[in-house]
Image (cartoon, rainbow over all chains, first blue to last red; front, side, top):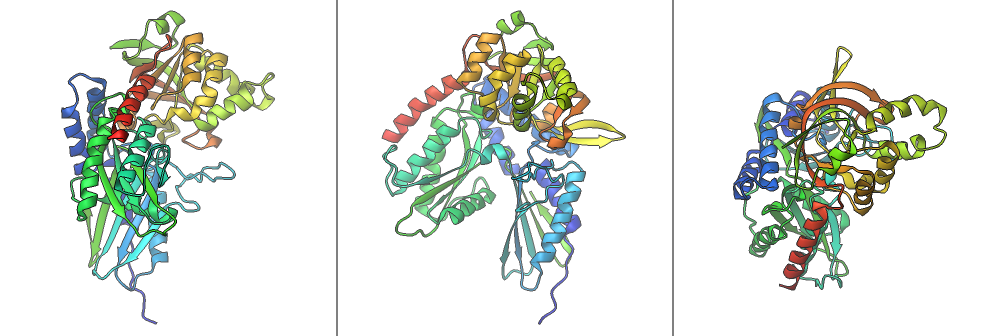
Length: 295
Length: 203
């Protein structure tokens, strides 16, 4: 048996968590700035975006959480052959405990039977880990902090849908997404970021939808049909007029990212992951012991 | 911009309308999901269970003419003193089944949160003279700056997010989105977006 490769991620992971919680990625902040400039001068929509932008810079400056709901910690770790995933989990768990002590994270893991808060963000399924072995000779750790308010407005729809006259095609997908954003109103902390998966089973569908939330705001989907649907849905969700915080306005959604998985003949799921405007994600790569953080 | 100081009387509340921006000062109480269940299961009972009488009195003193804030903060404790590090609002609609009773029982004048609430709470605001003040969701560091002092905490055993935090605030910012005259911005936006949705589904 080959000797496992050794690494200690703990300190680096603590810094990754700090960055994710306190510094909003630049592309998200830029999208919010553009939204601010688009809204009518002096409107409640523009005022709330101004407060949001002010909050983002205050949080980064003071190194305090952008939002008090520091959410579910979702880690994706890409690693070359030879590392122990169990040991990486232990190291990241220790970093999570320390991040909670530093108040970068709110104690957010509640026992579902007793209601007791674990106090340190560890618990069954918390944090959440996804490991991917890859060919590249470096470790990439991606972290998304996903808040509960936006998680509560996510939806998994089935096609066909008689009420919406939505069939098993891209126009049907469009209809269930619009209906879901209508139902969410301002409750997911609009303007939101959408990750959508067409197909898969229920578990894989949501997983893939949430992975879309790691995509940069301005990338273009390599699949032309999906790129077109992303653009159309961005335009049409904003025509709903729900606006920032649900106060009414021109920006309800900041970006739409869509994936497609194979499905069973019998099933046609559309999984819609709604992320609040505080789309807190951060990456780090580790190569030859050197850590580089990416916003 | 209306500057208001807690506690508030009915006349002041009746003078406020949807769309009014407000800066609120004084003492308020945080309370979210567990707190609302606790209020209904324990504090609204007659008699209040003996173990809860003290907390019950304290809660009533703050909430009578006062404000309840749907918030689970990030806190820090240094030298036995708590501070709020991040303290934006949580989604209020989860308290819809309970809030009307809480307003009525304690004489709450201001319910603070995000996302708005439903018909039952709106009716209670109209009947008893209360408003719903919408804070900016996610603006947690900004709002924490308006918390000048954490005066006390009750029921910390509920966990940090769910505990009842008695806080003193200065110029806490919000917008009235449900008033005491039966108006709700949330209902208006829902109706307008419903019409837009129908157009898009037909297209």
